Each structure stands twice: as structure tokens, then as C-alpha cells.
Amino acid sequence: MAAEIIFQSATRLAALLAAGNISSVELLQACLARTKAVDGRVKAFNSFDEAGALALAQASDARRAAGQARGPLDGIPVGLKDVIAVEGQPLTCSSKMLANFVSPYDATVTEKLRAAGAVLFGRLNMDEFAMGSSTENSAFGPTANPWDLTRVPGGSSGGSAAAVASGELPLTLGSDTGGSIRQPAALCGIVGLKPTYGLVSRYGLAAFASSLDQIGPLARTVEDTALLLGAIAGHDPRDSTSFKAEVPDYRAEMGRKQGPWRLGVPKEFFGAGLDPEISAVVKQAVGFYRKQGCEIKEVSLPLAAEYAIAVYYLIATAEASSNLARYDGIRYGHRSAAAKDAIDIYARSRAEGFGPEVKRRIILGTHVLSSGYYDAYYLRAQKVRTLIRNEFTAVLRDCDALLSPTSPGPAFKLGEKSADPLAMYLTDIYTISVNLAGLPGISIPCGFTGGGLPIGLQLIGRPFQEAELLAVARAYEQAHDWSQRHPAL
Ligand code: GLN
Image: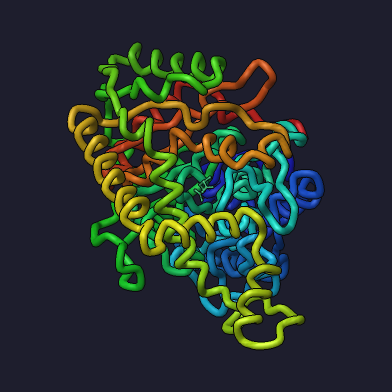
């Protein structure tokens, strides 16, 4: 049983559950067995609550037996990045600061998954507070890439991507501030979607950079991505930035959207710094769309290409320095045992609790917000952000979606970029501007390097046009078999 189901899509598993071919408890046991077999090497999980998951799976089976199944996600195991709150479960953000913190409430996405009957399965590893591109900045140690255990899975949602790629779980949630869903999806050979800013509630997502953060799905297929997106999207009065709009049935809506589409290829996203193998494979994917009758236009995003990384590292660090001020050792989180007075508690608890990358960001963010530097850095970055958004808006007037590589290189070796923050920051060169513009972006598998490492194709869409974006992605997926390939672990 286990071997046949661990790499099935969630949509297929939902059909098997509906037909009574498997039970949710059997499915959970298959995922648990797989996790126990491989996670000692992959290390996707920070923790999992076996008893809690079993109770949810049993409840799902009981509902189904009573004819009260809630829909396609009922009984399907879903893993959550360890930055999304689940009542009564650890919420560590892979930080020593929150190593012993247990969440007193559910995030909105968690509530929605419960309502859909999903079996909440475990807490997935990440870069500390989602700051990183390799999952090496975790206080609990790195996650490995299932395709090559000596390489990184990408980040910051590396655990979420590795769990899906390795057959541990069919679906996971990640968060994406500058690429943290799409880049690990690309490096692990799966699908990952960052929704339009405002489509998914951030309530219960531990904040990194609030104007950029979005929760989104990681899955084996585009259809599964649509399924999970539909379950978590929607207006939430508890998140003032959440958008008031009807959530379509993405799977049905995507099926109705037919090409040919007008697709833009930003010329700056194929320039220096892009691995030639990746460039060639992504250009083949562009060629596929052309053969399908899509109109392919070369477009230009000069500001995004030139300034996105700099703008992001001003805005994201400024917001992080403010958001992370709450970890003071007083209200919750790590408190230094050596502290003598209140100021000493703040200083020592933060010095002991945060890792080096988080400290670097807090210091940089505090600096760019400080008087005398605010106008020169933070304010200017906000202005350039607006120009970048306008640039995308203009280009998307004549294009239904844009095509680019997701990441400039394939999965790199563990430790390879750890000593060089700038090299690490540059891995997000194609994803970061999408967050600055607030647009939806998806990464889908589009081939492998000669060395057998997955390559991702990024598709960028118009705001709140996820159904269209998913349809464009699916047209490619249906004509290729990349999602049928799995790492030999
Ligand atoms: N890698 C980027 C960073 O380090 C993006 C992270 C993210 O999207 N959370 O900030």
C-alpha cells in the first residue's frame, strides 16, 4: 500500500478516499512510515504530533462513514511550516527564541484547513523567522534536498518543499516574502505558489516583513496547488490587509481558462548570473508555449532587475526590525537566565535567542529606519518599490503572464553560500520583485540539470488572477511528465 500512495497527488488521494479504496488512517500511516524511513536524512520536520494527527484522521474516517465528508481535502495530511500557528502545537520559527513556545491559537489558514477536514500533520523546518534561501539558518539544523542530500532544499520553506518532494506529505503550506515558497519548490522539483498579496490571511503567521509576507501552497501538481489555495484563500477581518473578494473554485475555474495566452519574457531575467543550463531549459519551456500558439513577447523590467534586491533588503529588514521587537524575553520566548535587570533581560535574551542572520537583519533594518537615514534609505526604497510595481502593471497590460526562471541556479551544496550573505541574497533575484509588486507567482518543474537536479519555471500573473495563472501552468504540466519523477531516497 504505502509504496503505491506516497507519491500520488492529493487530488488522486482524495478520489481514493471518496471511493473507499483507502481510509484517512491508512493514508496517514503511509505518510508516517515514509517520514520515519526518510526524515532522519531529509530532516524536513521540526516536530510532529502523531497522536493528534491520528485523531484527526479517525474523525475524518468517521465523517466519511456517516456520509458527511467535507470535500476533497477531508482526510488528506497537510504539513505546516513552523511559522504558522496551530493551537497547542509548537511554533518555533526554527529559532532558539521560540524553541519552547506553544501557540495558544490557530492561524486563519489552520482554522480553514481544520474546517476542510485536513489532517494537520507536523511542523516543517525553515530558515529562522523565514530569513534565508537555504534552510541552513535554522536553529535546529538544516534540511537536505531529497534529490541530493549534500545540497540545500532552498528556503526559507525548505522543510515544506522537501517533505512533498520526498514523499512524506502530499501537501504543505509555506510562506513567501521574497521567494520562500517558489525557490524551494524549484530546487526540490515540485509546485509552489505565492498568492497575490491580500488573498490569504496572514493572521497567525509569525510576521517577518508584513507588507511582503504571504502564505501559500506547495504540492506535486498544479491541480493540487489549486485545491489547497482554494481552501486557505479568502477575506479575513483579522488581517486588515486581506482583500474582500469571492474565492473562486480554482480547479473548476482553471479548467475553463483556455489559451492561447499572451506571455511576456522579461529579457533582464535571462542575463548575467543565470546558470546556462537553467537558461536553456527555461527557454525550452518558453518554446513549448510558442508551439502551443501562445504569443510570446520580449518585455523589459529594468527597474525590477536592477533594484529589487536592494529595495527588498531595505524594506524587509526595516519591517523585520519592527516586527521582531516583540521578542523581548518578557512576554514570551527565550529569557536569559543570566539577566540582572529589565534592560539586561532584553539585551541578553535577544543576543542569546536570535541567530546571526536574524541579528544582521535587525541591525540593518534599525539602521535604515533611524533618523538621518530614513529618507535616504527607507523612504527612497518605498518610492522605487512603487516604480517597480508600476513597471509590472504596465507590462501585464499586454501579457496574461510572464515567464522566467525561478532561481538563477540549481540546488547548491550545503555550506556553499553560508559565509557570503550577498551570494545567498542573489538567489532570489527573479522572485523578490514579485513580492514587491504584490503579484501572484508560481514555480513549476520544467526539467533537470545534467547532474539530475530539478529546475523551476516561474510564471507571474495579474493580481487576483490565480485561476488564469494556474491554467497557464497546467497547460505546460499536462504536456510533460516532470511531476511523475521522484528522488530515489
Ligand atoms: N530569501 C529571502 C530572504 O532571505 C526571502 C525569504 C522569504 O521569502 N521568506 O529574505
